[in-house]
Image 1 (cartoon, one colour):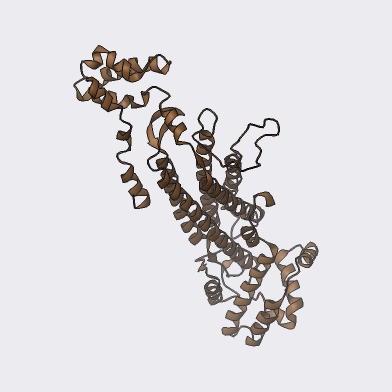
Image 2: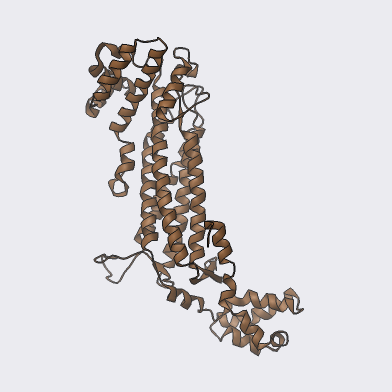
Length: 435
């Protein structure tokens, strides 16, 4: 986790202090359940909560113990025993390390998902506000990077809103899928721990019970979680790339907010570069980098191995912290995005009316001309305009084959920009539920 691309609340989820506190809570809740079942004394469970709950775990000391014993959970339990005393012998009864590690990871990923869902909600609010602001702002739609037909800038933002709504739904499902508890002991058989202990811990920590854990929680759950983060990152990149293209000097229909005192280049004082959206493109790659290793983690040996562990120790924090930062940055970009309707109109007019070619084509077919001949007539008038040789409407009116089918008034009507926006309200109602 690099501080430059991190936000404190998400970082705190993955801190050693948070991790050890969750480890303790899992162990203490398990002791409560075992005490109720008569496996350990109730007084011991009470002591464990009182002394362990008040403890300030020393991360450096735990690390020092681990360097000797070469086992992170044992190092923690050794340190915990220093606070609890004799009753520490009842901690971790019938449990295995994965019970603690996997349940903790589930809690951390669920908490991370909650923050990410809030991030998405903030982004959705910004997108909705700007979409309605520019609901009827005309701009050119592009396919293959080439002028196609008119759209509105509000529709562009509505498209992003709908996409991030789908991202939100996927993340809700992924959070539910990942939030499972496994307290099943060695190879997951509950031989030395009662399943009711698992049920108790799960209820206390807001998790569901893993139906069969084989000692570890199955990694298909984790793979789906990271894959969902990867899809969200790709949606971020899609919108960021759109903004980057719109900010190009030749286009300049929208641009990132350029604050007073900001400098775009160390060499060229005139530069205003899309650095935030370029950064978002790079951050999306970091998040997606977690997806393939997470998929490869699914295939573990028999009931368990630890080939997944190093991947999750790195990508659990990195992917969620990075995505949290990226979503917040994108929200800021959208919130402050500078939009240039005049440039949008200027670009719309650049091709001398060619953006209305389909309407002319269809009008000719309605007048009895075959589609093939209609296409030929429209294209032969369009190509000179493409080369900068005249105005499309003027050439159409001067073409006897066209004018014999379409009057001057007919052709004028075919160049009505508003025609393309007659269903904007319908689309907005589909996306936002209101117009």
